Image (cartoon, one colour):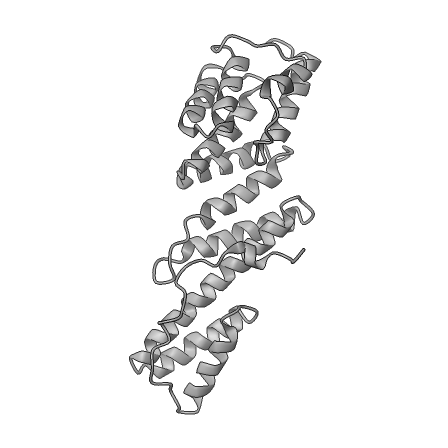
Length: 253
């Protein structure tokens, strides 16, 4: 195998660090690569495929980017650009909303490259693959639980990462979603006169999610039920069924 030049090693590291976060600063990609001493290559070389894939990715052509990176991996699996291609293939699938496929690729990257400097980002993306599959509170809520688990794992491993505030905010949003689900179920039981079941769900909500937005209303309903004073009206007219906006849970500037 050809020994990597110092220039190519530097280029690879810079590209990997740059492209694991949101791109699109507006600076010319040609000037950027020239500043690294990188000269244009044939599109069929590892460098050419990497450049072409990055160009497609940074202009939102994710399907073409995915094909370029997959070609690079298939034709040059031991290239110095293979790590970049693995990560950007996962990212391309993520932006194409192929969350299950992206999830598998991110997990493979984490398993095979556990000490790579992109791991904080990769762990964030694993959580985001679950997070983006959260539906409404009357559907399967397991993606929310999986998102909380994955994002909490990321936060424990890298509490001071650049993604700290977003990770915490998305965990809080997912927890509020699950609390709303419990309140939705309790309200259904209350409306169908299954008061014991309603009380059990409200008690679980308050035990598991005491710091959520819906908790005070859950306490009020539980108080009424325990005192044989059910409201006798629906609570579903105002209850949101969607995932809260995670930005509502970020610290104020």
